[in-house]
Amino acid sequence: MNSSRQLRRSATMSHTAFLLLLFVTLLQGFTLTAQRPAEGKPGTGTRRFRRSYSEYMEQNGGTPMDTIIAVNDYQGLFAVEGVSVREGDIAVSRHSEKSCFARSCLWSKSVDGHVYIAYTLSPLYSEEDKMKIKQGMELIERKTCVRYVPRTHQRDHLDIQPRSGCWSYVGANGGRQVLSLQTPECIGSAVVAHELMHALGFLHEQSRADRDNYVTILWSNIWKDRTRNFAKFKTNNMDMPYDYKSIMHFGKYAYSEDGNPTIVQKQNWNGKLGQSFGPSELDILKINKLYQCK
Ligand SMILES: [Zn+2]
Image 1 (cartoon, rainbow, N blue to C red):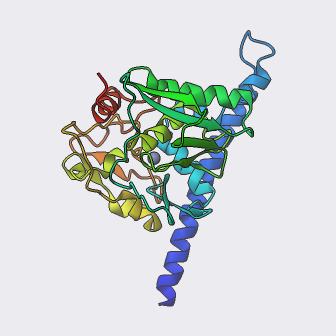
Image 2 (image 1 turned 120 degrees about the horizontal axis):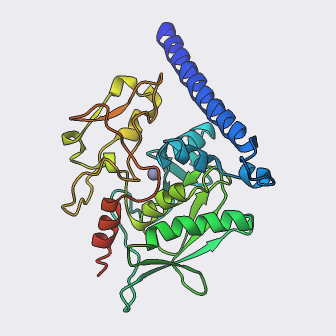
Image 3 (image 1 turned 90 degrees about the vertical axis):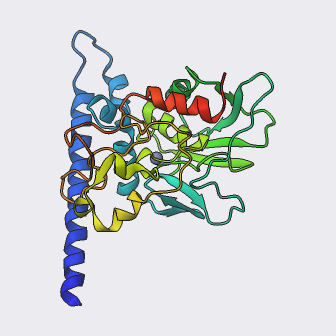
């Protein structure tokens, strides 16, 4: 009993130490890059320093989900203000009558064929933050019929706030729903697009019911307290292929106990998982199919 508790404690400590080391290393890299003046571009130091952590991760090969896990786990984020967080960044309300987890609750479609999603941005955001959040919205809008519009009177809307961590509810929950983008960590456009895709109704790609045909989960490499984040759900895949490049896919090292891969492509263990720059082509196709964009 005692030894198993000790073991568990030491495993927890080693994971915490690993996570802390990863975070500090990334942060150091970020600070060093940020402080180094851009060659031939004097006076850009401050602007570069304001570059968000998630942008740093994205430009250095990390996926938005890597950023989200680092930020949320560093915050010890499991439950905040009546909200519990599952699968790393999916909010589930304990009090909501309507739960859309693993099912999708769609936003309504206008007669002109667009899906207008009303939003408010917290006054706590800087102008630069707001600009970056809008860039994330544009990544979704570019090839779909979804349009993000500042709220005027709409009952259903996204209330985007810099709370603790990066998280969103799945689909439209009815009325006001918070989507948290902690600043500056969660403000990179790919992280914003990832959370907006949850709000559109999508879960993580590797939680598809058929995922075991495509990826192998290396359970023994996952930090024990986080194995529940690798659950499968009865997802509606809309007859769309599995997408290794989805912006909604966990990265290869998600929740790693000791730096070894936790999830790999079934046929190609060296293959990349996830997406650094925004929704993949299949992500866009899936949005268009779910919302029947013409
Ligand atoms: Zn997510």
